[in-house]
Length: 383
Image 1 (cartoon, rainbow, N blue to C red):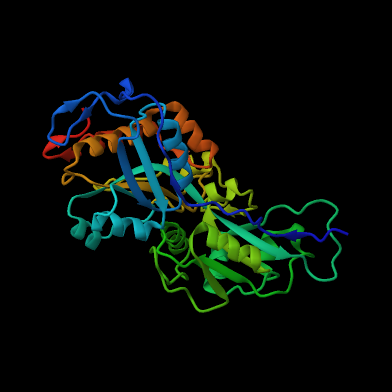
Image 2: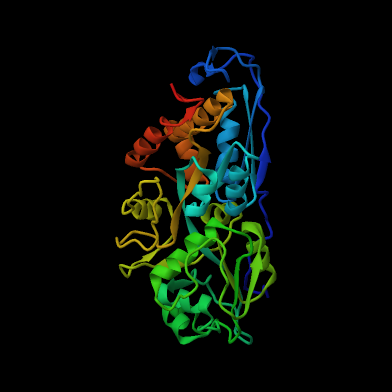
């Protein structure tokens, strides 16, 4: 008899990539020419002659990989390298000047803005953080005749699990939300899995928990001290997934793009409106519709009030120096790439296929206007 285990597949994405450009030895007309480092125009760029290095959040790595590959046919002169090292590592790298751009799901702190001086954040896509789990069926219980539905959690129960006040899978609160699982949930201790690295995913997740209940005391940050209990850490999405996969009776959080790419089962959540919602493009779009941007072009969009809003959602951001770049060829190539990514319909469609949600047109307009303000040697980069 097949043992019915809800175990995460051992498929781990590599969160970094290096793409080599190919093609003709002229700049693509779509690029509109390039500005030289002295501000003069140059219309010819050899294939692969401009190397752009970025690092940071693992969340956007799959879509940046896909976009960079597609962009080779738009501008063959560009080689784009992006390494997924976590939001904390990306922010440090852009501040230290070791990368040309950073990716971050975590918002820059006032101290980081001060140390980076002219840093700006520009949302690129949004996505959900989902709960994956590994629960062997209760001992002595026959396999169900039909597959069990995915687990459902409400906001308070999820806080209880990560607060270690709900400690066993057959806790009445979990059973009440999942009646089909009543005879199958084991009397086993829950192991919670979290990110061990500085992570924007953690910031989004803990901001949601903070909004869900005053019982959550750990705050909302990229790195936190987790409540004492039965918990383990994993580095990156791959580390969290590996820990869940290898730990019976565990639960962990990963970005939806990672879960979709690796065919991981993830739970549904009951949102603030009392509706059971699945993480999807539609439920992330509903959350984005409620967001209000700060003067720094950032927004917290967790725990939306509408019926269709998935409650654990966040933007991922491009982090750039907005006025201190001096290599104007490279600066223009970076901005042209991200402008293309936000305006090309196929690029947006690919993002959705990978599990992300493209920015609404109203947000794209704001982002493009802010990108147009970026300067190099005192001259606007985008023409």
